[in-house]
Amino acid sequence: MDTAYIEGLADPQAPRQRSALQDVVTREYTIHLHTRIHDLAFKKKAPKAIKAVVIFAQKTMGVKDVRISPGLNQAIWSRGVKSPPRRVRVRLERKRNDDEGAKEKLYVVASVVEGVTNFKGLQTVVVEGDE
Image (cartoon, rainbow, N blue to C red):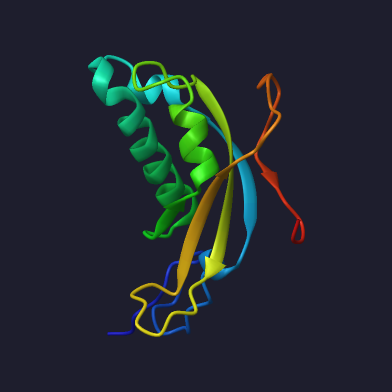
């Protein structure tokens, strides 16, 4: 019996293409923290906001190794443990991991974008080049 493949489906014997997730890229996102930390105990809001940024970065960049910059940490903790900012503009940089015994080939550095006061109309931006 001959196996016929349905048109539009990939042939399982065909070589797989390289994943787009392997590219080194920098993007800016607005993360709505308020929805992620709503209905939490006061003393858990800022730590949960940090964890929410890490989870967001893992999902959007496709990498498990996420590193929070000290500036982003200070921006989230700036108003104390009880009231982190409702939104934060974050720059996510996916970089190659050059360590010898690294488990993953890529890692993500999350840093805050300074000077954003109004989040209206901001969209995801791919940052070109190194700044």
